[in-house]
Image 1: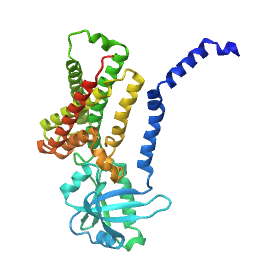
Image 2: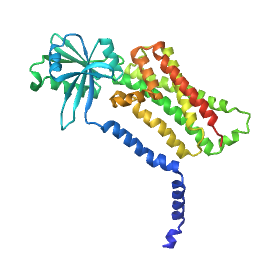
Image 3: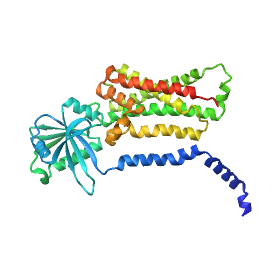
Image 4: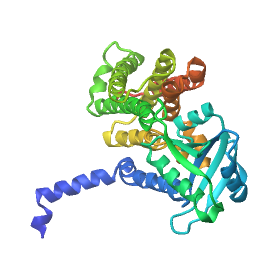
Length: 369
């Protein structure tokens, strides 16, 4: 027994274990933080079995739909708009709530582009028409639920003929929603790992200690890293956009100059955040935890792969304050909604201010070793 205990492999394993458990930061980021993330997401997604959908109704004459809504719906306010709520109870599959919002075509199209609404319903002489992106599985599900509900004998007789008219307008497709999100997501990842992790790794390897003896300003060192990352992010964004344009015919409908200004402000915001995160720690395990703590919530909440409007209403105000949400919403508005300088002025100023504050704070806290 003693020979096994004194074996070099056992001794080395025990030594590594003690080194790990004596670092509370490593235990927190490696074991407790994933639990907190899972609890937070679980509360966000499983707090209710009800699925909520927004449907835009266009036009003034919807006699069949209006009859059903008068019978089964009730007036409400949804996301600051007057709406009619039609709630369907299902003990097995969960409840479904449809919020019908009366609108015009331009407003309804923008709601679809932003992911706020799932479909548009209008009326033709033949009956109701459903407009949605045919490649959007969420919209297809809403269509199947709603069309089946409206044609059910249990609701109110004949509702007329219905027709599906797929929307293939630029900016309405899911790929139009996804590409701007991938560009901003790549920007954040490139900066957080390219700057934060690089600084922490150099500090852990004692490389930053050698720079103290050189006639170099701390601000010059950090700004040089920022400039390199900005140029790399511009190249990466152009590559993504080129292939998206070539394969999917993605177009920039708004002002290119405004898009560039917003893109640069996003780089400034994430650079400041990256420098603040990496300003003190010298352990790569702790630094990786901090980077993931910044990246993971924003990746999940900021609407990169799906609209953040699917999160509970109480959380939307906080989600919109996240830097990734601001830059992603702004880039999407330029790509898909034709936004110009006035529309992106507020997020550009807010992101730049946030980045400068983080940069100055991180620079003052920065240590070489």
